[in-house]
Image 1 (cartoon, rainbow, N blue to C red):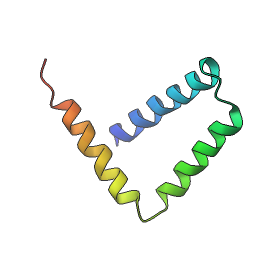
Image 2: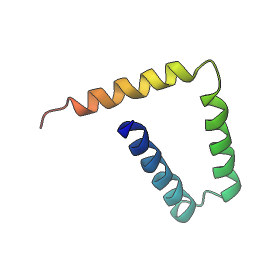
Image 3: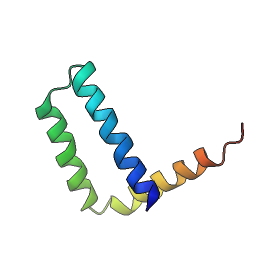
Amino acid sequence: MALSISAVVLLAIVVFLLVRKSGLKGGHAAVCVLLGFYLASSSMAPTITELTTNVAGMIGGIKF
């Protein structure tokens, strides 16, 4: 659960910065949010969840 909250916060910060600095319009950001909601309820949701969990595990396993 902590991973999900962290990912949401990270993505919200990225979207905020894109709106403020890179010229992403609010309407475009809203479309991206809606796409996320539709993807979450689609048949691809388990695959996306598994992919993000595996990528987070790989990043967490990197030793410096």
